[in-house]
Image (cartoon, rainbow, N blue to C red; front, side, top):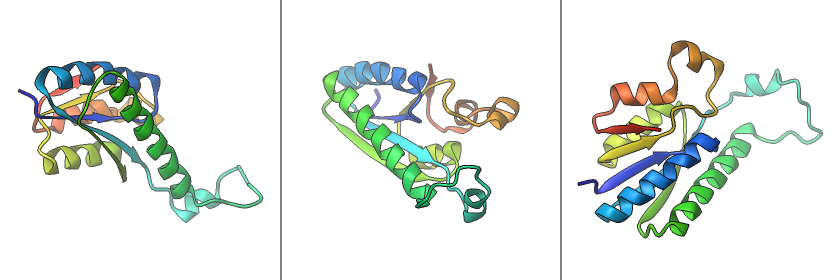
Length: 145
């Protein structure tokens, strides 16, 4: 039924809870599971107005990319521990909901399993969070946990 399951992760506890459901479905249907983490690009101007001033400033995109890679690696490890065999990990830069939807369409995902609340910004509470946008715009079923 589900050949390809997408699990977007942002590193939040709620996001990691989705992995148990993904693992159960993946084992039942022998599905591929793609773990995706999306980080937001920070411009030089945003970085320059930061109140934190390290002695050796790092490229914020590199720091966020490294964190996203850690999140994906941890998600993959958790799925492997639960017996999932076919797992792939991806890191993208951009707006989370947009990148999740683009990935799902391009990779022909059959199901998206996403946490209801994550590390979203305050405007997500006011304008609708990532899970809300993905649920409303996805062309495949979305399970929100």
